[in-house]
Amino acid sequence: MEVTGVRQPNERVVYGPQADSPYYVRYSYAFEGLSDSLTPGEIISQCRNADSSDTSTPLPESTATEYGLPQTRVDVRRYSRQTGQARIVVEWGIRSFSGGAAPDVASERSQVIQEDYSQPYAVVFIPGVFRDQAETFSRRINRPRLRTTIRRFKTDENGLGDTISGDITDNVGRLMRWRNRDRIIAGGGFQPTTQTQGYAYIILDYLPPVDGVLQGEIFSDVGYENLPVQALGANQVYKIEPSLSVGTIAELLDVTYRGPVLDTFGWITQ
Image (spheres, rainbow, N blue to C red):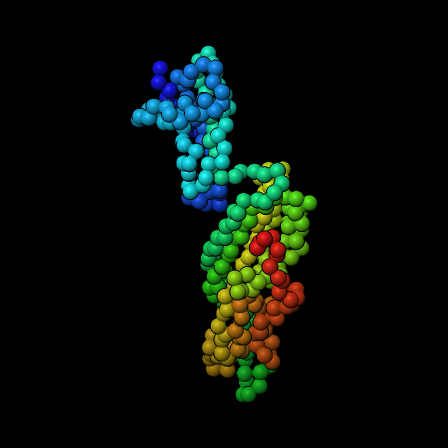
């Protein structure tokens, strides 16, 4: 009787930040027609020499790769001498660790979120040359938000996951330097995948500069005009009410984001 096998379509496991570049792949194979009283090595050998046809697939050779990953494990899960059947699991890449270094798995994804932004301005009444009245308005302008999510696979040793989550939570709303730009820490944390491993991730936002507005550029009529509106630098916001003396000004970055720009968290680059 010929040894025949088939890869089980419902027993496929792929781990990775992107579907086309995983770091771990596992397939399950079912074989029949095996001789009796075989050792695991003999079972694997017979299955690699199994019949190849439209309905039968041999066990991959030890040099066979999957998504460019090397084969790291072949496990005979079940074998029946009475029926000559076996179930074999083949793994490529590395799924879990007991200590040691985590796999080099990293992802960085950016998206542009189109948002409206409220730009306040003041309109003043000018009898002659004196400004004695002002009314505050606002207009909606587009200010796209560039959002970057950085994810790293980590072995959770000595409470690393809690440390990462705490560091991010404590600094949400502050600026951090990344890719030559200061960015706003918008969230993040640690997502465990096993008892000893997981993904550390952080969400960073970047707000582009906004052009300023000259006096009278938004509204100008007989006896009325808008006061000037200051330009916004990267990540700056308007939080201060327009005044009769200077119009609309941008809040200082160290006020909005609580002090100096943070250095990159070590776990991102390590």
